[in-house]
Each structure stands twice: as structure tokens, then as C-alpha cells.
Length: 111
Image 1 (tube, rainbow, N blue to C red):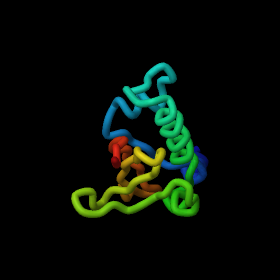
Image 2: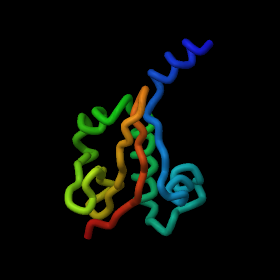
Image 3: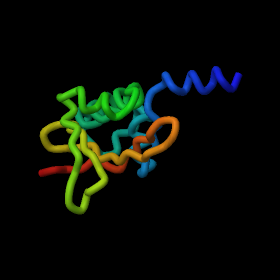
Image 4: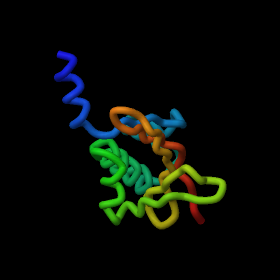
């Protein structure tokens, strides 16, 4: 049974942890908007589905429309994905075994 469990984990999506409980709620609670527009909420939920389904972060790079970018300066060690022209989903990648964990940091206004 342990071998089956380990094998199953290898084929499931990414591990995800939220730094902010409101962002976790925004992903899971259909009635919660976190003071974001419906378009941002919808885009965030779609990105979260993609993150959870990805085998690893290489899938993010392959999908050009995500605009998955490594950040610099005071955000070194963080990455961003575009939600729209104005907002970015900020995340970190924790190196873990057997697979990395995506840490959702915030939705940032880049304008």
C-alpha cells in the first residue's frame, strides 16, 4: 500500500501552500471575491487549477501565456504569473522531495 501511495503521488499535480489565508479562501470559496473584480477572481482560479494540475514548474515555462517570470530586486526568489495586464500572481517555489511546493504569496498590482 505504501508503494501504491508513493506511485500515486508522483502522478498528481503540484503541492500548493498559501501564505495568505484569504487567497486560499479565494481559490476554494465560490462566494468570496477578496475585494477583487470578477475577472481577476476567475483568472486566479484558472491559474490555480493549472498550478495544481502541473507535474512541476517546467509546465509553467512551457505555457507562454502565463508569462511565468523570475523576479529580481526585493522580490528575488519569487516568481510571477500574469492574471491580466495589471495584476500578477506572486509565488515562491520551495524545493522539496519528492516534488516541489508552490507557495502562493499574493496578488500584486503592477500598475
